[in-house]
Image (cartoon, rainbow, N blue to C red; front, top):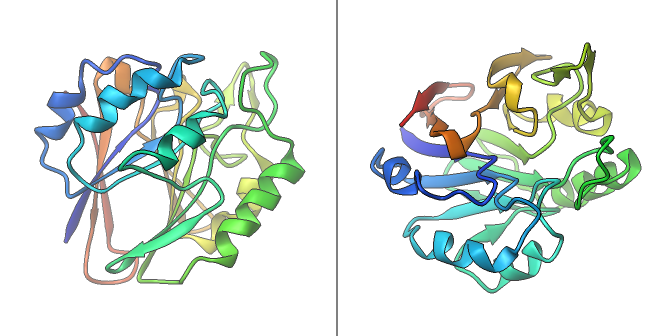
Length: 213
């Protein structure tokens, strides 16, 4: 059993990080919006506090140069990339599909599809196959303003994974299932929300706890 901490939507507020680390995860996933429209330099102090394997995708409120900072840090950017740790394979895509707000890191559906294809082309299939995104897949944890606003490109690949970790829609914290795939939004980390994901020793053995510290 491996216990993994999932956080997202910190928006530059890192005060809860010690409380998150007190949950004693073995690995940390960050599903975007680390900053609130920058500056990216503020994330250095956050990443220095994490003495665990840490994997990050940027959110729509993160400047694209967050990717450069991650390359120079001990954390790993999963945007368009993939890797395997034990029986868990991770792939990622950051940013979001277009929003009405013209935020910093938005991608067209074609661009999201291209980044996802790039990540999946280097991904080794494992017992647990996990997609780390900022935007949710269309139709799961993406309902706001009377409509679904998730990414169709992410939705088209959901079935290729056992778990999709997303964020973006603050009001949609929760756990859902889409085409047999679990989807989780851990909630707004700046408010102390997170998820602990427990990966078992058998396929599909994934248990998720939504927590507030």
